[in-house]
Length: 160
Image (cartoon, rainbow, N blue to C red; front, side, top):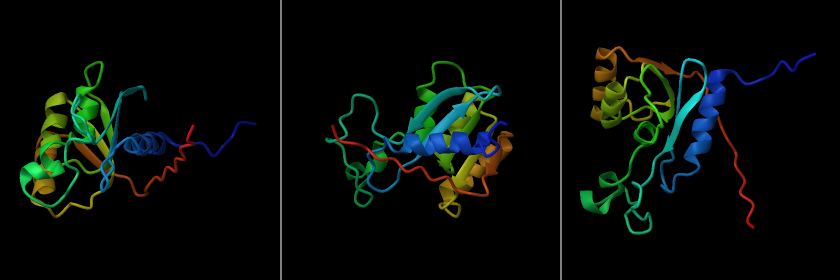
């Protein structure tokens, strides 16, 4: 008899987003994103971090201070990393992301043709950026679905 308690697709892909977030070196916020096609194939994965070839030891991770002395001027969000690093078009795909996308990521999501977003946390729902994001995504016909549960991925790294 086959095993019955397998992960559903939403839990599986959100767990992968959380696993990807474990690559982030941000000391405060770790976000992961997974883009999948309609055949449940993974198209791309991303996490929040510094742009390629920008040494993450030489750029700030602070949240407070002037724009150029904080992470906000430099970090590429998980959603954008997944879009930019995709080996093929993500048009018509679904995005799984652990934190609701900001307005800048919403623009990239819309322009890339992603049609559906599954997300967990909406902790910044009352900010102007997220309100703008939801307005744009809704106007563009992007479906937004908050999962009624959260996934936790516990990763242990064995030192060699």
